[in-house]
Amino acid sequence: MVALLVLATFVGFIAWDVLLHRDKYRFRVASPASNVAKPAGAPVVAGVTLPEGLSYHPGHTWALDAGNGRVRVGLDEFAASLLGGIQKLDVPQRGRWFRQGEKGWTVHTERGEATMLAPAEGEIVAVNEKAVADPAAVARDPYGAGWLLEISSPDIQVSFRNLLTGAFARRWMEESVAELRQAISPGALATALDGGTISPQVGSELPPEKWREVTRLFFRA
Image (cartoon, rainbow, N blue to C red; front, side):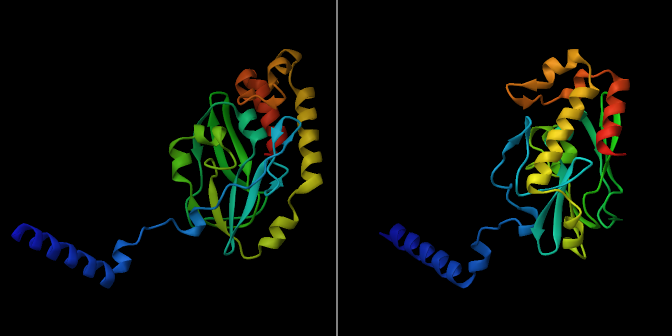
């Protein structure tokens, strides 16, 4: 009986503490800026997944309006495939400012390194440290877990006005794939597409000199 009274008293104290300090027991969630949902809907255009909720730079990087003046950026599936096995990512530190179309980050692969251009202008306010630590995530999920940076942009609309969306983005990707077909050898073409979708690592199938040629061509570096 005494044990039951002690237990009841203990439970009562806990309940009273919860009522008085609700914030202490509330589950913590990630901040909205670091928990942007992956764009819904991902049609395949000429074998390449091209989410409609994103805007695309001609250098095969993308931008997403993450709200509150922030823009999340990364590279598209075409770029991830063309790069091949990604071994390391060199991304700028927080606080750096870059203009749209200038050097954004460098990707190191077994074939060499490639520079990719920033799709929007602004100050870097977040880096996807998980992707930096695990570069393979960029190839596995370039539009989701493989995002790279978030920037604070003073005028988002100006940056997005210079990017490709909708029918323009689809046409651009069709032309990119067609141009890639012409640029790589017939032997590589046989494995460039697999079941109607682009191979995860087209770049790994190219000789180093050809890889450097096509990455410079498509990344506009």
